[in-house]
Picture 1 (spheres, rainbow, N blue to C red):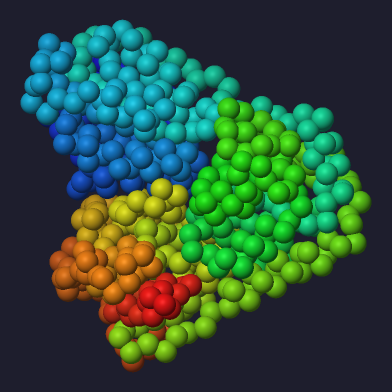
Picture 2 (tube, rainbow, N blue to C red; picture 1 turned 90 degrees about the vertical axis):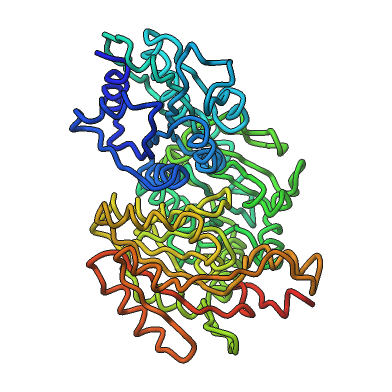
Length: 550
C-alpha cells in the first residue's frame, strides 16, 4: 500500500465522504488512489477557493470534518481564503496540499512554499510529511486537533514523491472527542444567579447548532423565561417568531437594539466565543469588565476569560449544559421577568416587520427577500455571501430551526455560490436559496459549472446594483461624496448564467416581484439565477445611501 492509498483509507475511517479539489501534478498519486475508492467521492471544482468554500459549507451543514485538496504554490495560496474562513468560523476543515519532491525542499523549487510558515497564524496545525511511516500519527493528530476544543482548520503538506512510498499499516482510531460534561456546582451557581436576575439574556452561538442544540435552547428559554439573542450567522438556532427571540447580533444592527440588550443584568453566553461582531465590537457585554454578571459556557476552557472578566467560566458542552439546567434546576422566576421579555420581543418584532421603500433607481432588494421569506419552503437552506444585501436576509427573514443557514462569520466574499452548490448537492431534496451581490458573484460564480456537473440546483438571488455596497457605505461615512474604487461595470448576468445552462430570471422596476420569485422557486430542472436590478439608493436594510451620507 502506498502512502497515497493509506490517506484514502484514513479518510474512509474518519468519515470523510468526499474530497473537494482542483487537480494538480503534485498529488497525482493521491488522485490515483482515489480512483479506486467507493467510499470517498472526488469532486472537481473550478478554482481552489471554490473547493475550499465547498468544504466550509459541508462542515457548516453537517457539523463534521470536511476536506479539500489542492496543488502546491498557486493552488495553496488560492485555497487560503477558505482556510481563513474555517478558522474564523471554528470549522473542522482539513486541507491537503501537494508539495515539491523532498529532495527539492528548501531549494526554491518551482512553486515551492513553506506551508508551516504560510499557514502558521491561520491553521490550528500544519504538518509536512517527510516520511511515509509518520502518516498514521500525523493523520490522527490532524483530525483530532481539528475537532478538539475550539474546532478549526489543519493543513497536511504531501511531497509528491512521498505519496508513492510504502505505508503498510492501519489508521489510528480517533479517541473520544466529546467536550467535558457540565458539573453540578456550575449548574447550581448559574441557577442561583438566574433566580435573582430581573433582566437576564442568553447569547447563543455556533456550538448550539443542530436539532438537539436548538431544542435545548428553546427549552432553556421557556423554562427560565429568558430572551435569547443569536450570534452572527446563526439566526436559525431559535424560532424567530418566538417571544423569547431577542434578535440577531450582526453587523449594522440599530444602536438602539444593542443599547436595549446592554441593560440586561446577567448574560449567559452559550456556545459562542463572544467575538467582536456578536458583542458589537466588545461593547455588549463591554470588555474587559462587563456591566452585567457574565457566565460563559464553551467547550474550550482556554478561550474563556481571554477578553472578558468572567464571573462564571464553564468549560463544557453547552448543549449538555442547557439540557442539564432544564432537567435539574428550578429557580423561582421574578415577577419582572415578563416585562423584560415583552420589551425585547416587541423591539425585535417591530424591527423585523418589512416596509418597502419607494425607489427610482432600481428595485428594492428587500422586496425580493420579503417575497422569498413568504414563499420559500419551511426547511429551506438559506445561504449568503458577504455584503450589505445580506442585511435584508438577517433583518426580515424569520428563520426557525427547520432552516439551515450557511454564511461566513469571517465576512469573506466568495462563499456564496460554492456554498450554495455544495449545500444543494448534499441536500438535494431541499430548497437552497442564496443571496449574493454583483461583487462577490464574479469571484467564485464559476462554480456554476460545478453545479451543472453535480446536478445541484441552487436558487441564486443576485443583487445587481453596480457597486461594492459595503465598502461604498463605509466610504460615504468616512469620505462623503468622494467615490473611488467602488463602482462596478457588470456583464449581462442573465446571459452569463444561461451560458452555464442555468435558468435566468430578471426582476426589473415595475415587475411583479411575487410572481418572479414564485417562478424561480418552482423551477427544479437545475440552477436558477434571479438577477435583481437593484436600487443603489436602497443600499442596506438599515439605511439608504442618502441617509448614510448625512
